[in-house]
Length: 505
Ligand SMILES: Cc1cc2nc3c(=O)[nH]c(=O)nc-3n(C[C@H](O)[C@H](O)[C@H](O)COP(=O)(O)O)c2cc1C
Image (tube, rainbow, N blue to C red):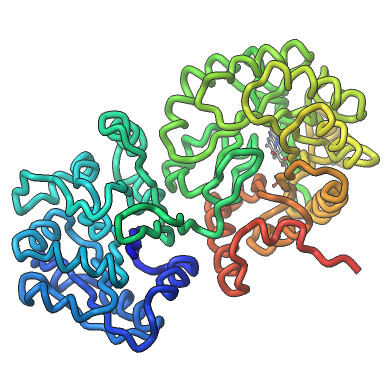
């Protein structure tokens, strides 16, 4: 068997798959690239050794430049580590390592990660798009060992900021070669048989499918708190997130409400931004081309003030790179329309039905908490053809300046969000999960990974993080990492195992 992975046997699914084919008491060779730079500096060696030892294997370090390749045949497991792919491929070829590796792949377990995974595959052509400077050995024949024709791209999320046009170059390569590139995140891999055919994708337990859309992880930036992502892309690759729900977009540009539009509240904030946005055409022409290259799922948040506006705007998303449309019928801060659709079941059903007809993308309806029974609204959205619902939007609130006796927000009222609303959001998601069959994306007050776990247990398939991003832009990443750690510690193999897992009294 062969495992191609991103950064070694990190992640429980990879270790478990390797454990199926590596029997305790066996021998393993850890192949390091002998590139002089890596010989001394390869700090991955102790970590990789430990990963193999945890499977009960006796581990030796192997170097093609120093040892005969036939020595590998006495091993049950051979792991080709990361490093310089050109140097590694050259060394294997030069020393006749190809046949022993092929035999290990057939009778034992051959693991290749990063450079190792690239060398085993069809070609280094893809890496040559990004890092030709690594070709210090002047390799002209970029064909790989060809133990498999499967082309992987390791460290997918991590390398997005390292290389410009990362995704675009990968797509161009796929088109030129007529192949599918498996984009692997760290902790992910592929299990292949000895002939090099994929038998299992060993994906991160964080991956989740909502309404037909595959999210790399269940953490999505909430609409209105992340713009169109550009500012945050300076801090981390957006590919670290499952998705981005963009600022509410309307048919025409909107200036939003006059200031003051936001104020702090205990455990949260009040806002009445009023759907300020540049309009759908601007979004499609100026923001979407950039966003579609960031390696994350794009949710277009659709707002409007009349059913026709919603439909016309939704139609414009058809055929674009948008992955999902989130229908915002729940914004409490615009005078005309918006929320009026979201507060009666009839209103929800009417607008959802109309937009459903116009919209060819998966459709998620974002529900207002400013109702008596939110689950009734969810049922109406489901009946009208929604593929998912997201809840909650903000709760209508108010603050007053006691000196001027004026409301602090110029709009008089605003939407309350942040940690203060979490218990309300949890209750609403829990109630809704008992009524509808379509998936729920849960949000409202999530600022820690523990909050996210609660939201999933309440019945959400994925979560969004909003206000927390204002106090800590890295909150979504921390939530993702904490969630993964929690899942690994508790033997949770997939996010969907948590969904609805609360055990009510
Ligand atoms: C400043 C601000 C702007 C918002 N703009 C939108 C919007 O354009 N469309 C939308 O559906 N929700 C919008 N929301 C609501 C959030 O997406 C989210 O539903 C709400 O804030 C609750 O989540 P949180 O407590 O994690 O922020 C906005 C929220 C804030 C704080």
